[in-house]
Image (cartoon, rainbow, N blue to C red; front, side, top):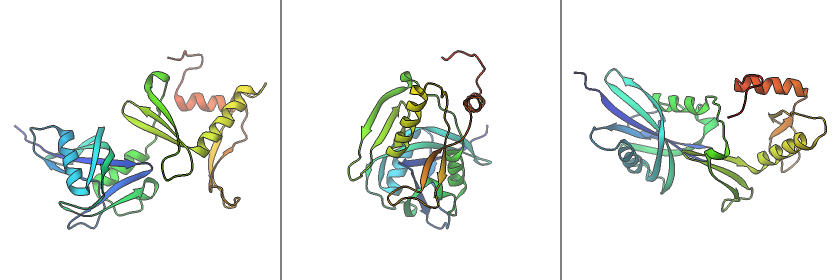
Length: 230
């Protein structure tokens, strides 16, 4: 009978930032976690490990990856969201920090952290209908200036910033109300020159015909022409 050890890791996300830890004796940054003994709840075990090593209480949401850590160990990686606590290193961890997701790959990362960043950066398709939403919340977080639109799902959140929503609404109204237009593409671009106070990242309209956009939508979603919506 083969006996495999078990390792649990947590991908802790706060807004657009990822929690990374640097363990004692290592130069690489990793995601919090450790080996565990069987016999108790995996979620409870991981939440305790993360609390001990980072000072944060987290909600362990769901597993996002199961892989072989080595020949005799299985690693399960969970998506987590912080609930409370004060960030500080503890246990076998010497440093902790929040890192923007789009900058994490620039750091020296351990194997678990590299896999986590790869998973978070991978493309996916998520269909959202009314039945998938628990609620939608619109407002300004304390200490901030711009509004957020939060779509709460059963197993996670989708957060849109004010400028993004404004662009989406304008484009949607244009398609809905215009007598001839049927489709629009907005493309994210980094502007080299911009007005003061404007973000360097903007959603700008792309010159494409309605038919080209409709073909693009159909291909991206893998839909059959004339298929019904569920």
